[in-house]
Length: 160
Image (cartoon, rainbow, N blue to C red; front, top):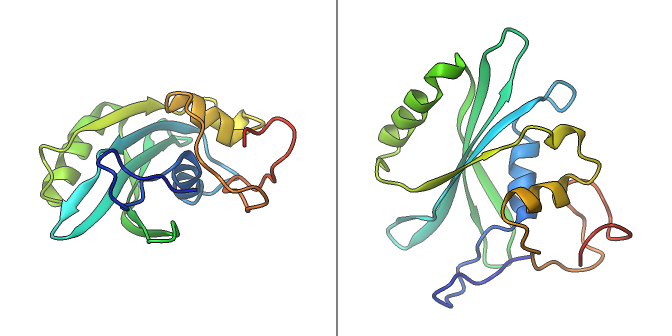
């Protein structure tokens, strides 16, 4: 479930399964209406490589709820997350300002990121496939029989 990064080093890069696992635990699954995913390039601190993402969902009062996570993958591809910010409710028009302030707080103001609309993810019957399509349609490496982040087992309709 891990892949080598482009320079060929054994620094595992996150797959769609890893990203889905992180965002699936961000909010109460009964009430989530996903909004956007901000997926940041790999960040380096000393000899450690880590990843950062921000996920937002819409809440009843028309605001956005934001959760920010840093995460890394161990040598065997195990996911280790650290919650950076939780349950920040903000007006939608202030989202870019809040993201900028988070990057300043993390001392990563020049960090590059992709902004991806997650509208419809919660209704998708195959969340992993839907997320793969949103991230560029690439099939991730995975091991058959492995537990999947979306609770689905390999079978019909899932790429292997």
